[in-house]
Image 1 (tube, one colour):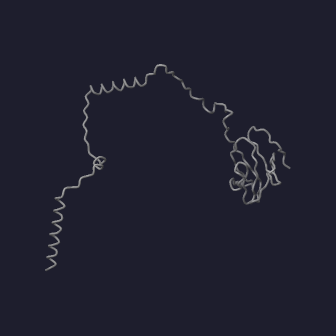
Image 2 (cartoon, one colour):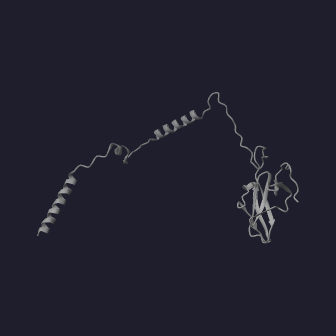
Image 3 (cartoon, helix red, strand yellow):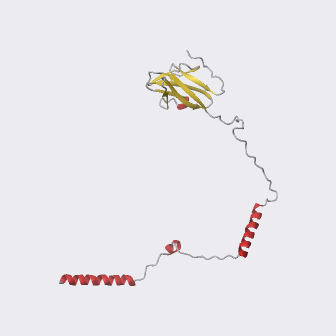
Length: 193
């Protein structure tokens, strides 16, 4: 019996709280929320043909005022440059790099790479690809100039046996030199032997 009385008392309590909440005024939104909050605005615009004509005339007049040349202003014609294919290369522009193919016959080698001025003498920077005939090849884009290089075969530095030019490597050996473009011959270059 006391349980029913507790339930009735609890139900009365809940009803009283809900009535108080329902009769309480809603909290006012802050001035900031009212200023930046979303609002629904309905705007009705009516234009008559005369209004459209007047608006078009105003836009046309404004365009004429803004677009008219000012007194004392000069007009400069800009001619588009000729296409690059028809244009001769200028001396201050660097020519496009030349694709140079390096090759070394080493049929018994397991790994061959190319190291030189063009890749910071890093043996792992330019690995070469073995062909079916045992000739290892790599293509490197090089700009105009004299470029020293050497092959690295299975971890050992190997001179290019077919090189036409050589340069001392500073360690008692020599590096091959490839000449790209129209550059003056190197000082101290000699045919390998």
